[in-house]
Every structure is written in C-alpha cells, then in structure tokens.
Image (cartoon, rainbow, N blue to C red; front, top):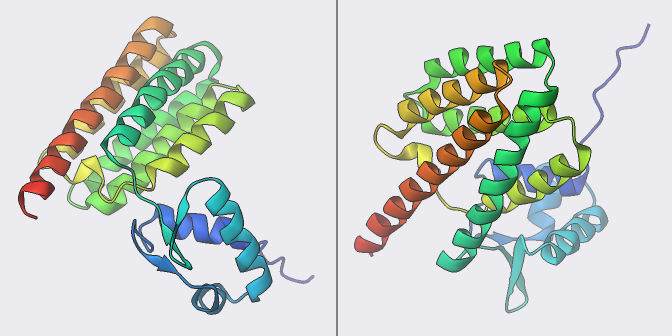
Amino acid sequence: MKDVKPPQKDAYSSILEAIDVGIYRPGDRLVESDLAERFGMSRTPIREALQRLETQSLLTRDGRSLIVASLDHNQMAELYVVRTELEGLAARLAARHATEEEVQVLQDMVHDDRALLDDPSSLARANRRFHKQIHLASHNRFLVQQLDLVHRSMALMATTSLAAQGRGEIALAEHQVIVDAIQQRNEDAAYRALRDHISVAFVTRLKLDSKAKDHL
C-alpha cells in the first residue's frame, strides 16, 4: 500500500502563511522568482496568488514592486472594533453550541500554552489556534469566514501584543475566564470576557507602538 502524501499547499495559502508567521513582514518586498523557488512552484500560480493578495489589500504597490502592506493607526483601530464584536459573538455562540469535546480542547489549550510563556512567537501561534478553536466552536460558518478575513489583516501588524512584558501570563488568565464561561454555558459572560480580552490586547498594542515610535 502506497504512502499517502499530504496535499501540497497552494501558492496563495503558502504566501499567506508566510506573512502570518512573520517570514514576510510589513514593508518586505515580494519577488515572484524568489517565492517560486522558496515554495517549489512555477511563477504562474505565484503571480496569481500575489494578484489575489493585492486585491485583498494584504499587499500594496511600491512603484513596480509588491510589498506586504502595513496598517496605520486608524486602520488598526477600525480593525479592532470589528474584531472585538465578532470575537465576542463567537464566544457567545460557542457557549451555546460547543460540544463537551470542543470545550475540553479549549481547556487543554489554556493548560498547555503555559509552557510557552517564555517564547512570545510560539505563544502568538498558540493564541491564534486558541481563537480559531473558539470560532469553530461557534458552529457558524459565516462568522468563521468573516473572522478568517479579520485575522488575515491582523498579520499585517509588525509585532504581537504578547511580546509585551507580562502580557502572556495575563492573556492566558483571560483565556481561562473565557473558556470557563463557555463551559458554564454563560453566553453573556463569554461575550464580555472575550471582548474585554481583545480590548486589553489593543491597549497593549497601542503602548508597544508608542514605545517603538519613541525610538525612531
């Protein structure tokens, strides 16, 4: 019996993931030939993927070059307004619809992520998985799609709020409150807990950005 190989990611997904994990950061130039070599693909699917990402405003033009877009203060504020409401709704629906198994997975994530407190980049990836799990537990495909779009735009922020001193430990405590509310089927508490969590993350990010500007 032949080994079944996992399906290869398409060009769009590969580039998007590379932006999401920070291989390509805001302001970085993306070159077709370099991307084709990195991902082992021809230039045609790479070109099509770049056009799609430009249409979604994840890439922008700098002369003839395409670069990873960045968010200004107003765009970031607008994004957090939308994210706060959608994430809160996801938590509310998760409290209503999540299976016992899904709740257990969330509890396990909070427990396991404590081992990553000294590694902000790994904790940031774990944080994305945690939020994605809540999105899925909402059992609303249209909400999941909208949150996917929001989180793609979140990748355009140069730093993670979890890099701030002490933020990781606080964030995990907030995660625990969210999961406990979902487990207790308390929709209002789950909604408030997740909205508060995103609000604190936004304040933390604003402080990080302010400090970064001070060093310019």
